[in-house]
Amino acid sequence: MALSTTLPDRVRSLVRRRPSAVWRRLLASALALLAAVTAFWPDVGHPAVVAARDLPPGVPLSGSDLRLVSFETPVSGSFSGVSALVGRTLTDAARAGVPLTDLDLASAGSDSASVAVEVADQGLADVVRVGGRVDVVASTGEVLAENAAVRERRGRVVVLTLPRPDANRVAAMSLDHALAVTLR
Image (cartoon, rainbow, N blue to C red):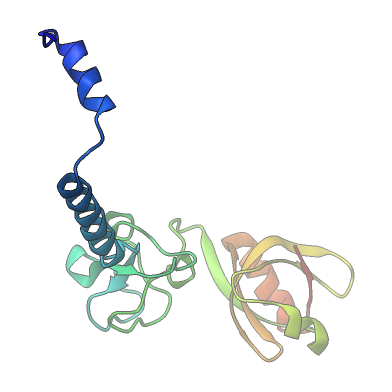
């Protein structure tokens, strides 16, 4: 019986043979080692920008004020890159290590303002949530502002961010009357 010298014939003859016990044990050990390594492999997590130190409100953020950290679960409204926050300002103070979200930042444009509004109905004020959107309605039925962002809520008072002309009108109306809001 002559041995074939072509590569395909050699591969076929190796495939037909049953692997030895040493090779099977070696393959099983390699697979077990691979499983152990992947079981303890660190999860890369979900990146989020946090405050590098305690930060005051109203000061423009710089790269040294921020750092990127990985969390096990995603943080809603967070940013995955420091560059997206450089130059923006905080609406409230931020603690070191706490993720910064879109609700922590002042709007990018200077054409908006925040105004505190006393909601006429306590039941409705309890339903309004921070981060939600509302329309502001006067007692006459006139819509004073549409799609206002809810920044904060304390009892019947909600702080809304909206375009500056609407904010001025809402502020003027809220001096005399409690206003109603409709949820979006």
